[in-house]
Amino acid sequence: MTRAPRAVTIVGASLAGLNAAEALRREGFDGPVTLIGAESRLPYDRPPLSKQVLAGDWAPERAALTDPEELAEDGIEARLGVRATALDMAARELTLHTGETVEFDGLVIATGARCRTMPGTEGIGGVHVLRSLDDCLALRADFEATPRRVVVVGAGFIGAEVAATARGRGLDVTMVEALPTPLSRVLGDEMGEVCAEVHRDHGVDLRTAVGVERISGDGRVERVTLSDGSTVDADVVVVGIGVVPNTGWLEGSGLEVDDGVVCDASCLAADRVAAAGDVARWPNELFGETMRVEHWDNAAQQGAHAARRLLDAAVGPFTPVPWFWSDQYDRKIQLAGRVRGDDEVRVVAGSVEERRFAAIYGRAGRIVGVLGFNRPRHVMRYRALIEQRAGFDEALAAEF
Amino acid sequence: MRIVVDFDLCESNAVCMQIAPDIFEVRDDDFLYILDETPGEADRARVEECVQRCPKQAISIAED
Image (cartoon, rainbow over all chains, first blue to last red):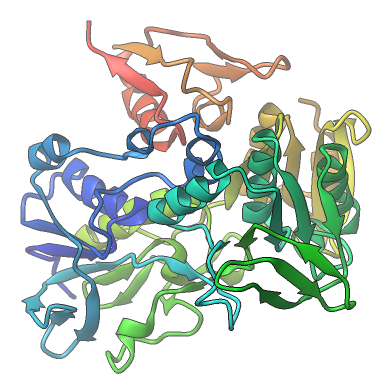
C-alpha cells in the first residue's frame, strides 16, 4: 500500500490547480502545499474572458479567483511565472524553466491546455487566440481600436461567445466554420442549426462548410481567404479551433501520455501523482468511456477529487456528468452529459422556435445528455437523471 | 448558519439546485429562490458544496 504524501506540489495554477490546493486544506492536510504557475498572475477565472472582460464590462481584476491574503491564510505557497519543463519520476523531481530542480512527494498535474493556432499566422498583427487574460486584453485592445470587421475562425463555443461579444460591441462579424453545421459533432445537426440561427439573427455573417486557406496582410491582418476562393476583409481575426493538452514537459517522464495524462478511474497517474482538469484523461465509469473534459466545472471538481485521492486511497472513481454553460447574446446555453451527433434528440420543454427549450439525448435506451437554452432548471433536473443512469423512456416521461 | 446569495453575481446556473433542491430553486422565470435561508447544521455539508461548486461564487454562509 502506498502512503499519503507529506507535501504536495501542484503544477498549474489555474482553476483545477487552485481547487486541488484548497481541497487539500479543506480535508485537513497540514503538510506544505506549493502551487507552480507558468503565468505571473494569481489564479483567475476564464469564463469571463470571452464575455464580461472582453466586452469591457468588467475590469480584469474582477476575474481573480483568489488573492495573496487568502492563499497565505490557507498556507498555500504560490510560485508564479515559473514553468515546469521536465518531470523525473525516479528522482521525484521537477525541472523549472529557470533550470532549477524541485523535489516533490505528492504531485498534482494541472497544466491545462493551449490553443491550436493556424500555421503561418505567427508574424501577422491582429490575429488572436483566446485562452489567457493576456490574450483577452490584447483582443480587447484591438476591439477598442474600432476595427471595421472581425473574422472568427471556428464556430465552437469559444468562437461563438467571441462573436456574440463582438456583436454586442457593435462590430461586424463573419464566422467561418469548416463543418456544414456548427457544433454538429457535439450537439447533432438539429441543435447545431439552432445555434447557427441564433448567430444569424444577431447579424453574424456565418459561413459554413468552408475552411480558411490563408490569413494575410502587410504586417497586420487585412484579409482572410477561404477554401472556396472567396475573401473576407478583416481587421481582427480570432482563431477558435480547439485546444491541445499541455503535456510536452512530461516527455520521457515515464508517465503515459495519450492526448492528455492517462489516469486511472480515481484520477491517479502514478504513485502519489494525480492529474486534473483539461490535461487529464481518465475512464469515467458512469459513461464507460475514457474522456478528457475541457469544462470549467470539470476542472474545479476534478482538482478537488485529485487532492482527496492523494490523501486517501479509499477515495473512489471520479464519475461526474460533464456540464458546461455558454452565454451568447441573451441566451444561456447549457449542456450536461456526453452527447454525440447521432444520439436521439427530443425537445422536452419549451420550443426551439422561442429559443427557450430543453432537449434530451438518448443512446442505447439511456439518457446521456441534456441541452438547455435558457432552461437551467430543466438541465439540472435531467442532469440528475443522467447521474442515476435513468432510461431514455423514463426521462421522456418525467415532468419537471 | 444563514445563506447569502449575491444576486448581482448569480447567473441562475442552477448547480446549487441540483445539490440541494430543498434549499435552492431556480424557477421558470430563470431566477434563483432560496427556499430555506437558515437550514440546520445537518445541511451544512451540502450547503458548503453549493458554495464551492457555484460557478459564479455567488453563495456564501453567514454565521449569525
